[in-house]
Image 1: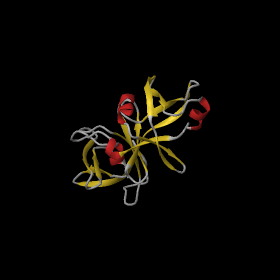
Image 2: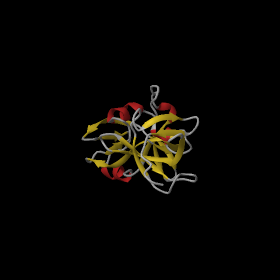
Image 3: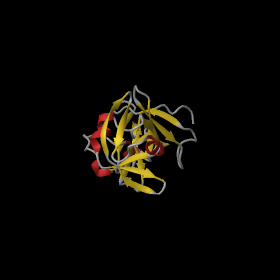
Image 4: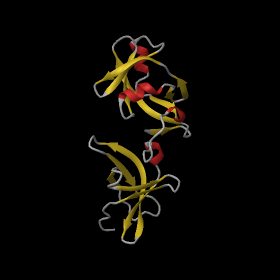
Length: 181
């Protein structure tokens, strides 16, 4: 999930278009499953000039995404006008996580370090996550102090390529190939 605003809200999906003629919209959820999106509640619509309360009064999975009806939106033209807008929720509306689990927002911006013999070297910062189906991939972008200027794609596999995440220290430790630098 990506961040929206000053850290108290998170983007949980995007309205990608309308569905039918009675005000339903297609939604691409950023949650682990479409059902998780519908279970959240407390949604807000993010527009150019702020956040507005949003209520879905009906919804269901449809293919890999969702279709849902927004309360008070009963025609296709109004639904079309919402296409492309993000749906956010307050951070405190998210369910608590198990030990060792993280929301992607918590990992964005952390420094990514790799063990090179007895020392660690800075590869860059975790910029974003790519969902590939098999496993997620962290895009690591070079930053000030990093070992080189390369962008790296590192599989996010805790216990394998990701050996430690320390949110307080702002650090992710990875077991990855440095190549030559």
